[in-house]
Amino acid sequence: MASELTLNNGVALPGIGFGVFQNPPEQTAAAVETALRTGYRHIDTAAAYGNEREVGEGLRRSGLPREDVFIETKVWVSDYGFDQTRHAFEKASAKLGLEVIDLLILHQPMPHYFDRTVAAYRGLEKLLADGRVRAIGVSNFMPEDLERLIERTDVVPAVNQVELHPYFSQPDVQAADASHGVLTQAWSPIGGITFYSGWGEGRKSVMDDPVLARIAEAHAKSPAQVMLRWHVQEGRSAIPKSTNPTRIAENFDVFGFELADDEIALIDGLDTGVRNGPDPRGRNEGYWDMKIPEA
Ligand SMILES: NC(=O)c1ccc[n+]([C@@H]2O[C@H](COP(=O)([O-])OP(=O)(O)OC[C@H]3O[C@@H](n4cnc5c(N)ncnc54)[C@H](OP(=O)(O)O)[C@@H]3O)[C@@H](O)[C@H]2O)c1
Image (cartoon, rainbow, N blue to C red; front, side, top):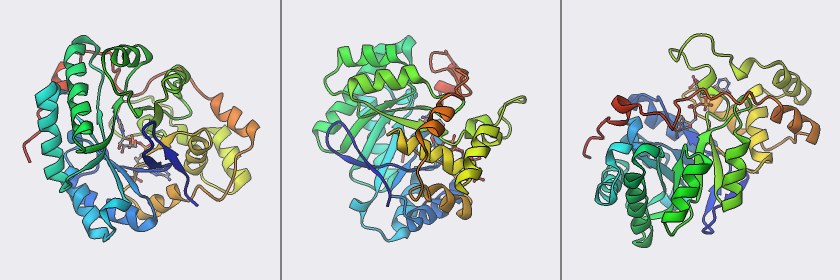
């Protein structure tokens, strides 16, 4: 039985979702269709991934009723601003082929240009008030970003999606989210960012960790399943990505076993405090400036 989480506005979110970052558009519809046939009911995409159209196609190919699937996407920073963000919704909605998006979040905090971030979030609040989205949130927000946003806006974000796997579990971010009633959502939940090819040499893959291997062996499960079970038992949303049907099924098969408290503590103890993804406080101008095409 899959777990379900409840957002701070009462909307339900499946505990394990499905990510599509770095999925070429031509593989995305098939991966989404496979995931939905496997039992996933939450898909996470982003304007910046360039595959929203194919996510919509995968959803339609699955034949599932629209209301049975929770669709989340993200506004890219070049579309921040009150009017621009509402237009970003129109682009995403048209590409996905959906009138209503279940969860729309800001992809980055942009602390150096925070007025624009606040204006973008105000745009999300308007979309929420108008019933175009069912929930709104943020991604890659550090505790100070969250604090500043909450001081200047009306709706507390439903989620904060951040890099979170055993080697970088961001206890400070999780505590700040929890103190505001914001659900922490784990990106790279099985540590993809620690082993993606082409992302720099010398990374230590969490998938090869000996502690995880021992726990996995004890439960006759894989390290990926142990990591996903750790997220589920700690009450986080997790959105593993795969294009491989066997691994798509493996990553959803995490509801028939239970990690003991000491095993959870061992996994918590693997945190290195070292970020693998881009620093959300950085001024990565070229990257942030990427334009999102019209629908
Ligand atoms: N908000 C943000 O800034 C942000 C940043 C990054 C990611 N995200 C979101 O989070 C989602 C997940 O994160 P992610 O894609 O970075 O990493 P991830 O889900 O932790 O890992 C994905 C990687 O693991 C491989 N994999 C999948 N299942 C596996 C298994 N059971 N055993 C071994 N390898 C496995 C995948 O390859 P195969 O496809 O070949 O299976 C892929 O290389 C993304 O797709 C995206 O939706 C958000």
